[in-house]
Structure formats: structure tokens, C-alpha cells
Length: 630
Image (cartoon, one colour):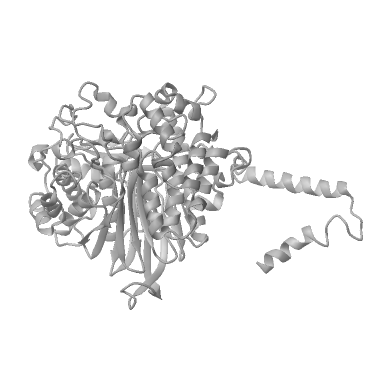
């Protein structure tokens, strides 16, 4: 810091405008203009830094990444945030720099994503958060999933199936704000208001439209132009906003300010909620203030399972992510060979394991409403996985009926995920969602909140399913029930030390994507960046098709499954289809070759040690997110 002061002194002190040489104002002005001109030229020549001056509404939180800040990977021994928008990663890290807990950073990051990535998550949605406390080695699961309104019923969409996905009737009771507040009450160190400031400024003062948001604005053009609220924000002058334009959501800024000042009651029992309910009901929805007042966050011990020497910690149902990941990994582990998942044969085995997993998972549902303990036990059981592994043949695949799937698959969408580790090695893995891109296709004009369409994640008795299988009764609508989800926020532990934080966005594709990144890094030894960037495959059981990546992503990289692997899969009877898209995975790992031992000061494990190794955070180039580090 002293060196910095010495460098700045000649421009500010003894060499200023008034000195023994009596430098003229005009000379100083010419010097200043020259400096500005050279700076602008430098910015232009370096590739676009000028845009952050003339776009973005002058918002300090909207600064676009410089040349040294555009990597998909960062390292630190202090703390990291990996979110699918670099601005939100930086905002999360800014909370860590202020001494915040990983949960403080998570609140600020989630709120930021709800503003700058409004097609995927936000105030009007819900999510799952996993929090591991390093001082106690305990991990909590925060279920802030949307719930069915009290007026919802099993057959409510019978006469209008489209309203299950589009329009205000598709909205579940939002849980994100309640969940963030609950986690903050238990773990937060910074003031609640502090965590809201960046998101408020981004909404009120404007943020630059990033490439990924621009893609979704273009794809959803008709939906946006047909809804007055969406049109006001994303086509304010009658034309859709483009990449680099400044987007304002002033009403959302006001809503965030109210919650920052008054707490979540401003939403769940106050003016923000009242405005939202009025807008929803005028648009044909059934949300009530009573629904908001009755919303509860479920806090419980996280679900843990041991695979290949690692402890995988994640959400219990209504998430199917932890159970799905556990079953697939246990199937691969049951081969008893560390190389079982390697190469083309390993990929074939992975496809088969995923197909078996999807056949089982639709027996799951909200455990408060349906009895699922037998299925949960099976999906966590190594012996059950071994039985499945024995049905997998290395030389062929099978038609869907071989896997004995009884129910139609959940086809959820969207979401946003981020991973956070703080200086004390507390960790957060959080997935947040409004389901489809731009949710229900409705933005509340008086609050700026995009409505979720989470009701579409329920099954209904009369729906016509793409896979021709009957809908899953365990996932039928009931008042105050939460729908099944594919969200898979995970924390990985090795020898009681933090090994990784991982999760993804992309609906039904999340579980296969997170599984492949886990296998790549923890089982096959790939580096974190390679583990995320490696081409992926997807399977939904029905149609009986392996979808493989073949596309050029936002940053210009081309991702495609190798020809050798495609040939190998075809030889075993797999039908293949190229796909431009898939799930997005964020990933953080801790490497402990030369750890620093930090004695625990609190809790019953005070004689143990917390190891501080090197943290590496990776963002998926498929969405062009950027990690940040202290």
C-alpha cells in the first residue's frame, strides 16, 4: 500500500498545478486529455474494454471482464466463487473479501443472477442449497423449492394442458427469498442489506446484456412481445434488446430494496407480495397472500453416500439429483476396477447406468406426501447397484422395456448453479430456478418479478407424455406439495476434508452432466477444467437415443464427442444424435498436496484439523460464465 501511495504522489501533491514553475491550466488540461486519449486507445486496442465505459448504465457492478479476467478457471488459497455470470462471481467474492461467510456470498450471488440471468432464476423462483460448516463438519440442506398453491388440485390442467407450463396458472409459491434468509440467519456474518446492494444497483441502474441472455431473448421473442411486463424490460422501445445493450428492471430494484430494508416479510407478508399476488391473479393465477404467508423452508441434514472413497453430500427428495448421481456412481464402482469408467467402453457403461437410473427415479416424489423410503434405500444401496451392473452387457444395449421403467420422465428445464468456498473452507453448492426460460412467460409489472412455471414439474393423470408411459403418481399435484426435481447441488468430501463443490443447470440433463464431471475428475483423474470441458453424452431412456455434443459454444470453442467413441457406441447398437446444447456445470475443487492445518475453534470436533489446500474454480464455457477468487 505504501508503494502505491508513493507512485501516486507526483500526480496529486508537490507536482500539481501550483508549484514553483507555475504550470498553466492549459498545460495541465492538455496532459489530462492526452492521458484520457491514450487510455481509450489502449482499451480499444486491447479488445473492447471501451464498451464497459459507454454501456451498462455506469454501474460499477456491471464492469465487463478485462483481458486478465476472462479465464474459465481461477486458483486461490483464500476463497472462490464459480457462477455462470462473471459479474455475479465477482460480487460473491466481494462479500468474502469483507469477511463474509460462504452463505453471505451465496445470497449476493443468487440475487445477482436473478437480475442479470432472469431467464433462468430469480426472486420469483426457488432452489436447493447445500451448506457445509468446516468448524463442525456438518452439512445442511435448505429446501426452498416452490410449492403448489393451496387452491391447486390434481386435475387442474385437464381442460387446458398448456396452462401447466405457460401463464400465471403455472406458478408455484416462490421460495428463494425465504430460503436465502433462513440460511443467512444461521450462517451469515454481513448485514442483510449489504448483500442486496449489488443486485439493487444492477436492476435499477442497468446491466449489460450478455451473450447467453441475448440468445434466450431471441429464442423467446414471441413470448416476450406478448407479455406486457417482459416487453417493458426486454423490448422497452418495441425492439428486443441485443447483446451489449443496457437492460433496466427498475421495479425489481424497488422490490429488492424493500426486502433488503424490511426482510423477507416484505415479500411474504407485505407490499411486495401484495403487488405480486394482484398481478398474478389478474393474469389468471391462483396465488394468494395466504400461500405466501404459509410458505416454509425445509432445513434438514443433507443426504450423504460413500462412493469410491469419497463422501457425496446433497439434497434429499424432492430432489432426485443426489440419489440419481449415487446410483450411477455405485453402478460404475461395482465393477471393482478403477478403470471401469475409462475410454469408449466406460462411456457405454455410463450410458447404460444412466438409463437404469432414469427407470428408477420416477418412483420418487415429495416425502411429505408419498412413501418413498424403499426407493431411496435402493438408490443408495451398493448391492442394488451391483444387481443393475450385472444386467449391463459390454457388447450391446437394449430397448427401453429392458430397463423396466414404469413412469414417464420428468422433463424439467433451466436453472442456474454456483459453487462457493470461503477462507475458512465453509462451502455452498446452490441451484436456483424458475424452470423454463423466463419461467411462465409472465413478468409482474408492479414488482419486476418473473413468475416461475414450476407447476409443470408435477405429473398429472391426464397428460399425454412424449414417451407414451403413464405419468408418475408419486409426483401428482397436491396443495402445498413440492414437485420432483433434477437439481443436483453436491459437496464432495475426502477423509473429512473438503474435496469439491459441484452442480449444474439444464433440467433433466443435470444428473448425467454432473455425473460425467465427477467421473472425469474424481475417478479418471482429469484436471478440473478438462473435466468440465470434456464432451458429454445424454440419455433420457425414451427416446432410446444417445445425444452427443456437437456445437460451437459462446466463446467460440467447438465441443464434439470423438469419432472413435461414436463408432464404438454404434457398434453396440446405440442410436446416436448430435446435439447443440446440454447442461452447464460449475465446479470447485480443493487440492491438498501441501495443506495448511487450521485447528477448529468451535464444536465437538475441536481436536481435528481443517486443511487449507489450493482452491480451483471452473465455470463451464458452454454458458460463458467466469469464476472469481480472493
